[in-house]
Amino acid sequence: MSSPFFKVFTRKTYCKALIASILIISLILIPIIISNTQDLQYISIRRSPPSSQTNLNHMAFGIVSSLRTWPNRKGYVKSWWRPNQTRGHIFLDQPPTPDLLPWPTTVPPYRTSDDLSGLTQRTKPKFEDVWRLVHTILELFREEDEDNLRWIVMGDDDSVFFVENIVDLLREYDHRKYYYFGGNSESVISNYWYSFQQAFGGGGFVLSYGLAKALAKDMEGCLVRHAQDIGADLMTMRCIADIGVNLTPHKGFHQMDLRGDSSGYLSAHPNIPVMTLHHIDAVNPIFPSMDRAESIRKLMKAANADQSRVLQQTICYDRQANWSFSVSWGYAVHIYERIMPRSHLQKPIETFTPWERDPKIPFYMFNTRPLSKDPCEAPHIFFLESVRSSSDKISINYLRAQKRDLPTCSYSGNHSADTVLNIHVFSSTKKRLQIDRSECCDVTRVDDAKMEVQLRECGVDEIIA
Ligand SMILES: *[C@@H]1O[C@H](CO)[C@@H](O)[C@H](O)[C@H]1NC(C)=O
Ligand SMILES: *[C@@H]1O[C@H](CO)[C@@H](O)[C@H](O)[C@H]1NC(C)=O
Ligand SMILES: *[C@@H]1O[C@H](CO)[C@@H](O)[C@H](O)[C@H]1NC(C)=O
Image (cartoon, rainbow, N blue to C red; front, top):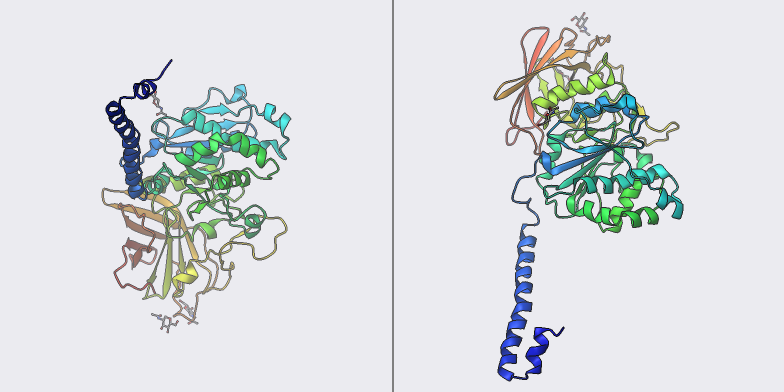
């Protein structure tokens, strides 16, 4: 078959050829010009989010689980999953046994992980389970790749997600570009052994649509090239690096590579919204005298009133008594019987122990304060009791955890806080997403047993001291 272009030139009619050439050139050029203008527009909007706001239904969750861990961990997934609002899947290593069926509607629908035995016969991975976990990214993408997919969020069955905070974070970014969000380990040596460049998987990580698509397309190449990797999160990072993308670390993703009592860590959360908590099984229940799943459900009660403030630390002082207050919103309040600078109170009290069995210092990626029996250093501790919200105000009641059983700090005026039994903390219902500055607060005493703390924006030049 001869093409029309060929006919035009065989007629050798100069004029016609000229008109045809102009036509052809314009036909070729116009799309180029148009696409260039599109590129220019694209460049000019690339820093801003897409025109329609990112919502929960734009994100798909991929939760990696197994028949062995699921029965004990489904309560954690239930605590944050919102049936008919959140989308995604649980990926099991094997089809569920009859006792796990019918599958509850209060957790993500399950999928059984793909059989990779064809691939493992050709290339032997160091750990087959590592391949299964990394391959889940492709499987989730395959299940969820529809018009309105913008982000995928990966985690374990013992990861707890604060989904509204994740949406608020992702709203600021263009999903068509290449983003990899997540957090490091709290343990120095874990970052050293694996990578300072990787998002630790259980702490949750987020891939933009553009990146997830590229990674899914290269999945087989990725698994083969990095078959010897010892961790799925490490392999994921290496494959993402091969695409030319690096981690954008975010301090709200918590791998929680800690053991024992995590309350010191959780009570000194930076002033950013919390995205995830992980290793719920490795630490004690986060509220004393409750089991792990109950504790997480309790924290979620505060989160349901205002996710943005959860755990964020606010510090203020009672000058009459020379006390310092540290409020970790929705979780705990500490009273210290002397004035301490914010820089000191921001350091977690080392209530926890290192992740590794035979640790060497430095243990943690942050400075800590030792657990102390010094009455001027040890806090009175109050934990979340109840949450009440109205249209403009949230009121949270915190109850004393236990008697401190120490004398009064004498050098700051000998003002004992032993009588205080509960603390009401009031905050605005307006979300607190900004990370340039903490909130401030004011302390008032109602009677010997009850204190009130009112959170508010700090004054322009206000000093917290
Ligand atoms: C989800 O929606 C379906 C259909 O709209 C409904 O039948 C089901 O009860 C809902 N599930 C929950 C847990 O709300
Ligand atoms: C607060 O503590 C300082 C010493 O740190 C002391 O000089 C001052 O008198 C105390 N104020 C009150 C009200 O006790
Ligand atoms: C501190 O106050 C208590 C009673 O509130 C008193 O018994 C104690 O002697 C005081 N200590 C000092 C060092 O003043």
